[in-house]
Amino acid sequence: MINKAKLGVLVSGRGSNLQSIIDNIEKGKLNAEIAIVISDVKDAYALERARKHNIGTCFVSPKDFKARSRFFDEIAKNLEDNNVEYVILAGFMRIIPLSLINAYKNKMLNIHPALLPSFPGLGVQKKALEYGVKYSGCTVHFVDKGCDTGPIVLQAVVPVLEDDTEETLSQRILKEEHRIYPEAIDLVINGKVKIVGRKVIRK
Ligand code: GRF
Image 1 (cartoon, rainbow, N blue to C red):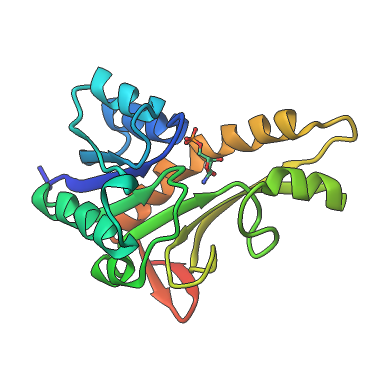
Image 2: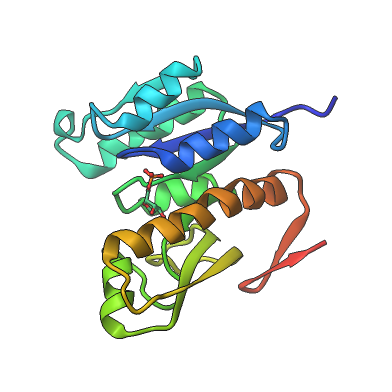
């Protein structure tokens, strides 16, 4: 049995992507172990989801640290203490500092609810609707120093319908997020892809 990759999942909210990772691990589709779920929001529902599956959790309060760097030092310490090999951002609503990105170079993934490089940043389902695009989707990418700019592992496309609201489009995208995030994690932790320039190539 190959050792299971140890994941550290960073969350801030409802944690539906965390749930899909947990479910895929429990079904045996993803050979990984969630070593710790870390939240910057005390009552994030994601923490509740983790606890229900006996996964270790930790709340790091930004209010406890005067400097942003100290807050992230604490997160890094929690990741190290739990021997985390891969950091999975799953709705974590903060910009990751360079120090942490470098500590997990090519071992940190994010999921974004748009087809990057279109619509980086926040509130992107609404922006896609307002722009009038006919297709949107989601992107799993490595985290680099830019905002949603890292090499792309997987993307999924969904149609934008004329009567879509932010809510209906978000739901259609979310369904695809739950499918491709575990798939992308599998590719990365099992060394099935390599990064060449800014391209992610299947080996
Ligand atoms: C998702 O839409 C994800 O793409 C974005 O934040 C949202 C998190 O949702 N980065 P959840 O907490 O996983 O349900």
